[in-house]
Image (tube, rainbow, N blue to C red; front, side, top):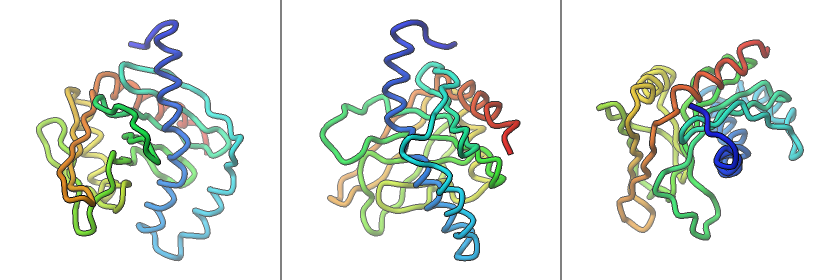
Length: 198
């Protein structure tokens, strides 16, 4: 159920802080998936967006928000960890599910971790009683392939909580916790928000 009044404005403001990071993360991941041959097309999509690109809020649902960048024909559902205290760091963590109709991408999982992973460390995601290995490095990780994207989204739809764990550069274990209230509705809103964009 969408939040009302001031609560909606506060939640939207916090969620918007994470929205701008999505473009670069998606391009980085897709470049790895597609190889050098697909890089030119991805850079073409990136050029469509600038610092002043408009983001339309599609709604804030529980702990999740849904947004659309019409200029890029992309939509996404996004949330921040429930235990994030916003210390002074270079970035804020988030979990996002993206839709890019022009690139035939639907339900892509993108996680920005609260800590950078150690050099040989991996991250895992737990939701809906399932465990998924994530790919990536540094603070940015993704589902390993489209099949895992779909399985993770299905697990998020089951509700409850999601935990993303890893080992930091300092060698310490960390875990980012997400409340999945509103996740399914936000994912649906993002999918519908881009359904007619091509």
